[in-house]
Length: 89
Image (tube, rainbow, N blue to C red; front, side, top):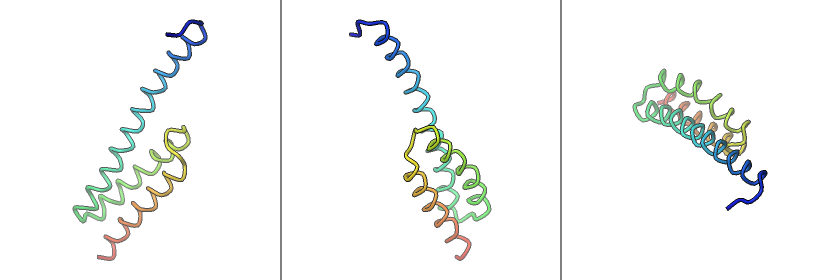
């Protein structure tokens, strides 16, 4: 158990940050899932719209340090590649 006031404060800060990060990660997963569902349904318009909504959410997660910037770049690249594949099909 934390003995000093600063250690107790750190525990409180970490708990708050963890909750915030969990919520943000969950939100990102939801947006990504919407894109994947639209791609699976071969709905080009819905997939493009979902990708446009997911992009800033993913970038925000990278900016806040919740996800690594290269992870976000990889995910966006793969999602946009799948969306473009619908357009050709």
